[in-house]
Image (cartoon, rainbow, N blue to C red):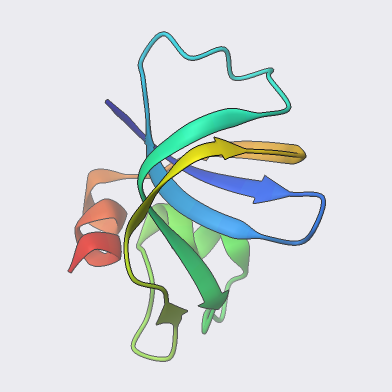
Length: 88
């Protein structure tokens, strides 16, 4: 599974896992083991969530599988260090 951060047209920011074979150009896709960034709490913007993960000020939702996430605007790779903080 590939760890990614996904943004949506509705300003949603989600971290989760997609299949390695998932078409990353799709405007809708399933997202497993997903969490939503309710409040980023970063000092270096959205990309900080991908590089080093949520901070102590971030507010992250409980995990859930999303059978189909619609209206995707961006997909970003999440580092292993960042993913460990997302799932902590």
